Amino acid sequence: MSIQIPNLHTSNRTRAKVKARVAIARRADAAHAGVFDVRGTLAFDPAADDYPGGALTIVVDLSDSAKGTFVVRTVEQLDATGKHTPTLFATGRCSIDADVKAVGCRYWLMMADNKRPDEEKTPDVISFLIYDRNGKRVAYGTGPVQEGDVAIGPTSE
Image 1: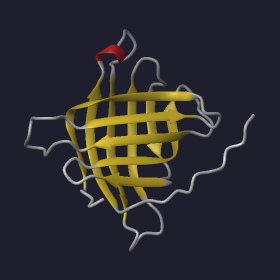
Image 2: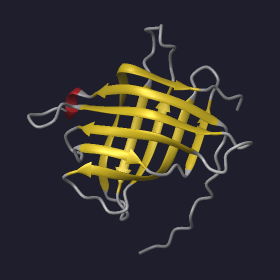
Image 3: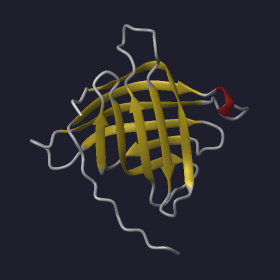
């Protein structure tokens, strides 16, 4: 087994709100609807907050993934970049409410705010990965938002 040096988790000023559904046709089968939902908020203001935080859930009903609700427990790193299409990256610990019991559940999340709610041009995009303490994939998905919206505050970086 090789040793890994931990990353230094620094975050920038970020605020995001999401209530969105992503549908992936190739991830639907007789037992799965082929969708995942992301709902909640994430935020960090280095002038006021000690750490990033928020309340977020990812409800997964995709083939080739554990089916259930993943709840964000910590936000260890939260960064956003971009002015016109702000993109957010987050990572931390989570818990799972599903038949599969993942020990040491961790998440990685990316969301891109590609449009305003009243526009119908480029859809927002969400990608996530849930893995256990051994690095085994528990759930994953990437796709355009079909219903709802991703709202990320723009940055000047």
